[in-house]
Length: 341
Image (tube, rainbow, N blue to C red; front, side):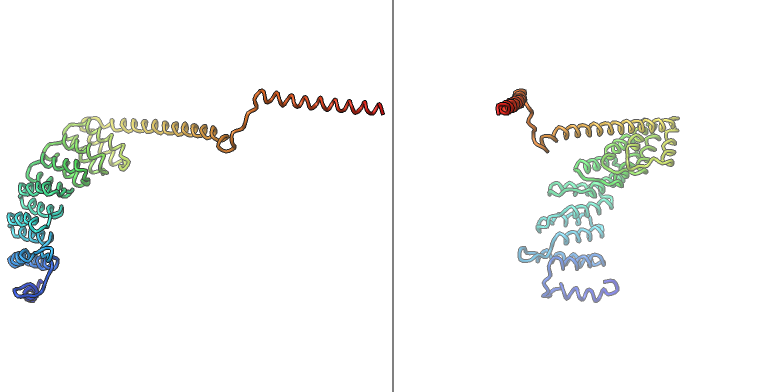
């Protein structure tokens, strides 16, 4: 429309002006509605939106949908008319346009960005009433705004709700939480969330360094070593020379820089013991499997061999002996017959 406002408005009047016979659906109307809002024709957008709602007659004709209300909510907010934005948002259900998570987030973001946290929280409260689930973005919006409004406890609570809802905040959201808590002196709370999220997120070096520095600045050097212990077990983190120097620098504030080397040695010893035990268990399992296979081979591959009982062996020996006796007797008889002849 820019540079061609006159032509655009002529097309607009022809398409949707009074007396127009053009039948438009919600999607087509929304395109015009959005263009009017974006080009400072909000009064025209309001008139068109009223017309769209009046013509809406489902199931025969659908002239408004979820997108229509989202466009108007954006338009009202852009003109600082937040109360009306909330009101038009609340009318969605009257037109069978149920708001989704994206729609809620859109309005909550406008309210948060304009210092209207209480109103944003009221809209957030409606999500549960309408059966709409907040997502990570919903909670991070409210968390960030709570920090801006000096409500760190509420910010932490929104983060906790996000985790309890089985959502997965990313590392950036966690880092903002930790930073916000440390800035207001809530180092213990920051450490608690580090312990919670260390099992759920792939921490990076700056995240480790941040919490270690916060703890050392607060004089909590045992907790620093606790973080180092976690770091040494983290397969994604390389304990290079630069990182070691950083850790020693923090521990040096309490004269405990040598404890890093001791902790590394202890970790190496435990790893060696675990490796030796693993090898031993593997060898034992191998021997056990070999024994099991050996016990199964005769019966499974060749069939069960019958063993000779004592009675069977005696019978066989008797038969052999008897056969020899008969043979001797036969030879003796043959010799006697020869002599007679």
